[in-house]
Length: 225
Image 1: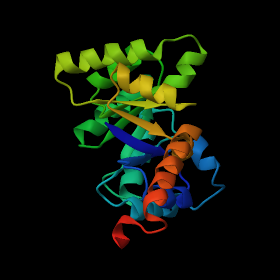
Image 2: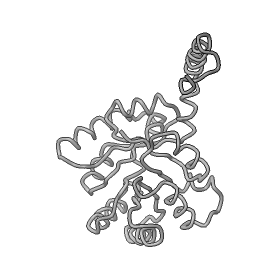
Image 3: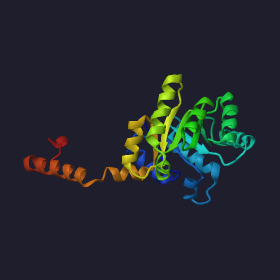
Image 4: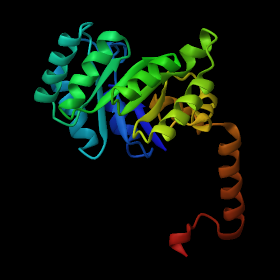
């Protein structure tokens, strides 16, 4: 089970990496737009410096041809580092580029997945992660859990090492459903995790424990005893 941060905000990554057990950072042009017109390569080098080389960094290309995708991937690997996972939408040009890059040993995150045929062809093309757009699928009446479950079955049957990466979430319930359906990882906005742990029942339970402790030992902590 992996949690990846779906953000390009340096302050957010720095704040929440001390709290949540995350395994990487994913971004796309829409996420990056929220940061304004940053120095592209420098910004991602800063993200890498924050998260270290033991966590994965996933960056999306924007070209729409196989040759362009490959060229952009090479630029990312050269100007950031060789461990970057290249996020590539699953369409015909994307699948062609994935196969070229996998022969070079490049890490691939197949993205913009809405259907089983996209997921399964990405597996066949050698993708390492499969970013399934959970909420967007729900919104257009495609069952994301069925797509995840059937893809997970195919991965097991073929012995593939691909990991289903649930993406595009609006609430924690969707995240939990993705894991239950067979996702090995999710990419999620850190703020969504933060708010999920702020529910009144949790806050009240902590307050009750503190009150009961103080009724016995006052303001002393366990370390003070």
